[in-house]
Image (tube, rainbow, N blue to C red; front, side, top):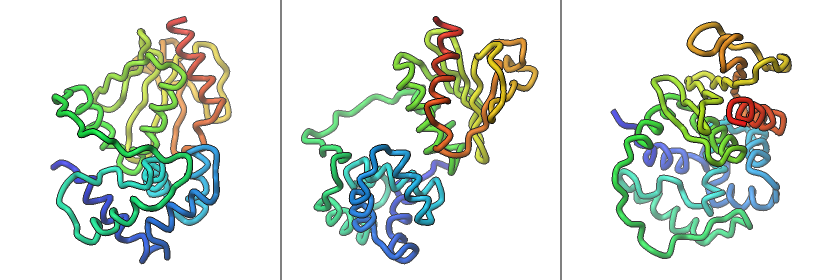
Length: 231
């Protein structure tokens, strides 16, 4: 059964006032007032306000979307949510806001690769936003990298495979082609077999559970792995 993210988002937004004391408009204003420089900083701040990572990430994504719900047009419309969405459009959310589209979006043909990637990311459940963040950061290091979803992981190549992002509901596992690079500080040798052993291309592995792990050190490791394989 397909996951109705629109309905989940509406339930999350509708419950904000009762669960946190602030509605969405108030949270958008509070985030903007903090004037935090990076999206990860916003997530960290929201977690300090009591949000779980998945909810903090979702709220940050709405803020980055100009205060508009990500899945506003999907599923059935909740009248109360519709009123709130109309109210939210008037809320200024600072320089991170994205402009509203001025032209209708043309119909786009189905993309089997994108559908397969979306289906795999859904298996990450609460870690889906973290997986999307990891992918975005990898693309920032290697803009030409391609994503090839498999049954339990995403193969990442540019053009040859230099990384895999293992998708799970309890953690993510990033496998990298680091050769003889030393281990330590969370960086481990990959488990034998499946192309992840110490004598095979994808030699190292990191378990990821928090956006704060996606730092400059990790980006340097990703760049090193890509260079090891592709130059």
